[in-house]
Each structure stands twice: as structure tokens, then as C-alpha cells.
Image: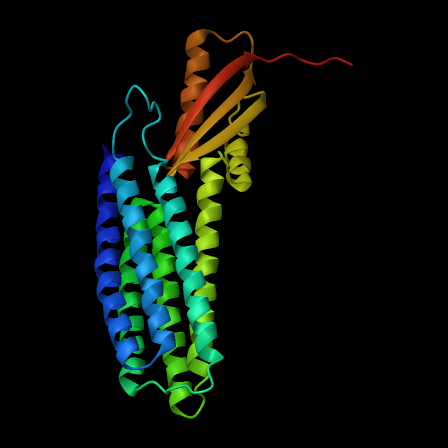
Length: 292
């Protein structure tokens, strides 16, 4: 029950991000258009892709809350990764569009300097996104959500992008008109880079990738249990924020079924103490001494 309550709490962070991004995206695009700022318009398009990413996280969290059924024995926890994959493709397309428009603008001989309102809009947006970042980071740590934590760090990068847009606009106002579209190009590159990172992370999870350091940590926990003679095999996979570990161990062949079962429970308890969202399946084999 705690699992699904945590996922439901995570939806609050996704909704907070969606509302903030929609409002800021509309504000930046309108002010940027009438205020002649390529950097602010690029920042606004950046936020529009963040709306898609936040919606993807929200949909993923909602689907992930569905319990296991006849066709999904491990639940629906990977729905979030699929949504992230779709969002990454959309972000790349928007990033390329921003780069194309900014490049055309920077090569134009006559460039109009943006007005001061665009600069204040960028600075205000940075302040709002920093508040969203702090809220989502606190919530992510509270429910131990890797996807919401990634969203929080994306909120922080968006705040930094808005500060960069502010600097670019100020530069244009003091006699460097090329600095505003140059900032837009940097924003477009940031959008593409963020999309690639999201794509790689989602693809890693969907192809059953598993962090090697985490696997080493779990192996160490299991090997320190006195009754475990050896670890014959250990594998892991990730579903959302949850870890599923399959391990084969060797124990004293003289142990009975009850004693062997107690060892498996000890392994599960010890692993969960350090990796709260983990499920361990233990297969036991009789230990065979090798003689030379």
C-alpha cells in the first residue's frame, strides 16, 4: 500500500511542474515575441517541452500505480520509462527547431535589440523554477522517487537556462545584439542534451540495465551473512524506482528446509535495510567443497 501511496504523492510534484511550465511557457513566448528576444522565445519553447516531459511523468506514475494483473505479473512500473522515451523524441525535435531559428537570427544582418521587459521576465521565471525545484526535490527524497528527482534536477537546469537568457538579453541591451540569439542556440543545445540523457536513461531501464555499483553493494550485504557459503549467481533489473534481484547462493547441505528458509528471509531483510525499494528472490543450492 505504501508503494502506491508514494506514487500518488509523486503525482503532486508532476502537477506542480505542469502548471508552472504552462504558465511560464506562455508568458515567455508572448513577451519574447513582442519584445524581440530569441533567447526568451527559446526558453519558452524549452518550457513547452518540459510540459510534455512532466505529463509523461504524470501518466507514467498513474499507470505505474496499477496493480499486477494476469498480463503484468511485475506490475506496470515500466510505463514511466516508456513515457520518458516518447518525451525525449519530442524534446529533440523542439531543440532542433530552436537551433534552426536561432541560427537564422544570428546570421541576419539587422537584429532588433530586445526590450527590458524580456530580461525581467527571464529573471522572474528563474525564481519560480527554483521554487518548483526545491519542492520536487523535497518530495522526491521523501518518497524515494528517481523519476521525480530527475524532474527536480530538470527544474533546476531550467532555472539556470532562464538566468542565461537574462544575461543574453542584458548583453544585447548594452550593445551586443548577437548575444541574444547566441544564448538561444545554447538553450537549444541544452534541450537536445537533456533529451539525449532522458533517452539513454529510459533505454537503459527498458533493456534491463542495472547499476553495477548497486549490484556490488547487494552482493556484499548477502556475502556478509554467516550462513551464506558462496554467491553462485546474482542478477538485477529495475522497474521504476524498484529493484528486483535474483540471487543463487550455496549453504551448508545439512540444513533443513526451515533453516534454509530463515536464511532467505535474513537476506531479504538485510538488503531492504539499505535498499528500501528492493525485492529479492533467493535460490538455494547445497555447498560443495572443491578439493585439489
